[in-house]
Image (cartoon, rainbow, N blue to C red; front, side, top):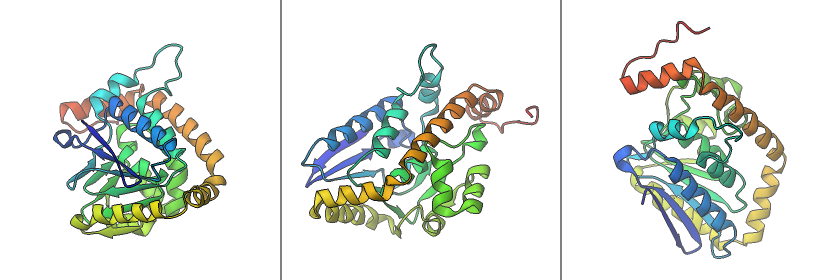
Length: 259
């Protein structure tokens, strides 16, 4: 199973389990996670959700071959039925608290999804990146809204415009993660924090989360819609095609002919 989904002691744990491909996420994996979150929303036995990867890798982001295959425009379809949309809608709309434990690389969607989680913990080997501009694309799933809110505009601009990787300590300074721990302590700590949430009154936790998110829900939904329309339009443009061709050909892309 490329997504390990387990329920225990009130916690739904979703674990990326594709280490041979650096936990790169396929459309089927997105759908699996979306369905698990939606199922947890209606399951009274689940009181918290935990998302994690492997000690050496959280996720390399989209499996590019699978992503490009499933991202081709289909006439008459809006495209928001793709697995990644289903997953991010489920995650962003989850009423129950979501905890993330990140070790190793969290690339692209691997960093974007953290902005929609409630408690985020990172190992000291974690590396984050939002390389959309390097791929001829734009931010996704409200990251252009949420990252400036977390980190301030200048630091968010550096991460989103340049797309360069940054470490766990800087992520903590930015407010993207709450705490940095040694790799071996990360998952036990995240599990313990999730267990604390499980032990608290469920209605209180859900209501508190809803109140904190209330003022920005409309802006998040609107930004997600705008970003994703632009993202998939840019995916068909020359810059993105050059970036992906260069990636598969293992060469440096040349954007000099594009204005």
